[in-house]
Structure formats: C-alpha cells, structure tokens
Amino acid sequence: MAHYIGVDLHKAFCQVCAVEADGTRAWERRYPTTVAGLATLSAQCGATARVAVEASGPTWWFVDQVRPHVQAVVVVDAGRTRLKAGYAAKTNRLDAYRLADALRRDSVVAVWYPPPALRDLRELSRYRISLVRTATTLRQRLRALLLRQGVTVRAADLSSPSATAALQQVALPGWAARGGQGLHALLGEVLTRLAPIDAAVTDAGHADPIVRALETLPGIGVILGVTIRAEVGAIERFPSPRHLASYAGLVPRVSGTGDRIHYGAITKRGSAWLRWALVEAAIHGTRRRDRTGRWARGVALRRGRLKARIAIARALCTEIYRTWPRG
Image: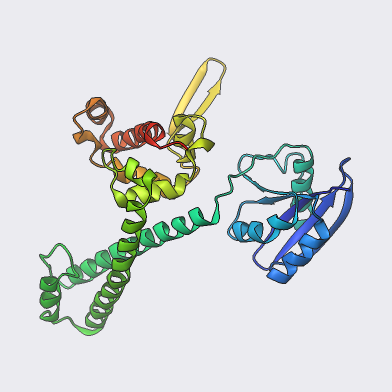
C-alpha cells in the first residue's frame, strides 16, 4: 500500500512519519542524515511512496538521495503551507506527521526542483557574489582603520599598485600596523581568487543563449545575466511577470479590510539573490531614454531615488519575462 511520508529534516537526523490514505499513522522512525541512513529510509518508504519535506539547507541533497527510489518527493514551502494550524505543540514527531497529513490532503505548496546543472550555476554565481562582498568589506575596514590613524589613501582601489606602494610607506603604530597589513593581504588573496571566478561566470554567460538575450536589456550585463538566469531557472514556472516579481520579493505587502486597502513596503520574500541582481541592474534606470526611463524619473522626483530603483527593478521583471527565450 502506498504511504504518504512526512520528513522533518535536520543536519544530523530526520524524523519520518508515514500515514495511510485515511490519515492514520502507519509507522514513524528517526534516521541519520547520511547516505547510508537515507538509503535505509528509501528502502523503508518503497517505490510507491510520496514524500514531503520542508525546504531547508540540506533539502536538495536529501531529494537527490531519495527521489530515484520513491514515486515523488515534494519540497514544501513552509511559508505558504499551513502546517501548524490548530496545534499548540511543536515537536519533530508532530512536524513530520503534519507534513505527511498535508501531503495526503493535497494541501501543500511545493517548491520548484532545480536540476543539478542549474544548481551548479547558482553555486558559481553566488560564490562570485560572496567574494565581491568580502572584498568590499575588507576595503571598507581598511579605509576605516587608516582614517582612525589620520591617513587618507587617494586611490579608488586599495589593491592597485599605487595604493599598495602608498600603504607600504605609511607608518602606523602598534596593532594598527599589523591590522592594516593583514587586511591588505586578505584583500589581495580574495581578489586573486575572484579573477578566475569572474572568467568562469563570463564564459558561462557567453555560452548560454538565455543570458545573451537578457544582456539586451538595459542595465544587465553578463555577470547579472548569469545571476538572473541561475536564480529564475525556468521562466515557464511563472504564469506572469507579476509572479516573477513576487518571487523576487519586489511586490508590496497588501493589507485590506472592508473598503480600506493599505500597500506597505516590499515583501522581500523569495530569492534574495534575484532581488539583489534586479536592484543592481536598476541602479542607472533613471538614465534610460525610453518610456520606462521617463516614468522612473517621475517616480524619483515624487518618491525619491531609492523608491524609483525598486520600481525599475519590478519593471525589469516584465522585460525579463517578455525577453526570456522559450523552448
């Protein structure tokens, strides 16, 4: 008999509960979150089982291990699925049962399963973003340290040869000297690692027809194009540009009661990486000479430049949706 399986997934273990078609518990057990543990779980579930697991850090690795051995694995969006309604307690066993029961009742909201190749492209893009942010942080900390000692370096890039030569001639006292040397050395190491990653991202973008199509849009180059392509994955999973903007967290919160409707700040729910890329692409949107640019300049005059940037990022969702190659 096919069972509905709920999995409460953690780093070291997963609590599993199987329910029958009428909602009664069939069995429940705890398995270690290892290759051997998940192999035992897959064998226990059987080929006709349907498995539900909440989206978390190790979810995709879990899905890759279990999916070939069961009928289906549903990754549940916990933020949009009501799992705990009517329950005061929260335990691992209850969470697993609630997932299984919600799957049985077909009341779960599933997360799209990205294929391994796309997940690998995401890792490349996110690794580059992390290196860039680390380098920016190191530059800011190094400049702050120098300013505390009354030293100003004119060079825009502290890793440039002129800035390096200027720093070598600055005499700083005590730990400020050692801290400055350490931050400068770390900055150089991060930039050394960043160079081949930039090249890899550029090569991946030039080889991808979707990225080449996205590059035709204002503000989107190969780097941002790869990030957007990796985070969106398949445009077909979004029924409309509004759904794409919602996935990026760029739509306003709406609260309505009676005849009153209040629009708040953007939700910021969904892919933070996609939202960052769209906002980066919208930085110079007010300089556009088309209809969108004129509209954005009006928004900037009425509500400020930052609000206009968010509005342009949301408008980019429509342009991306229309430009994205199908098939």
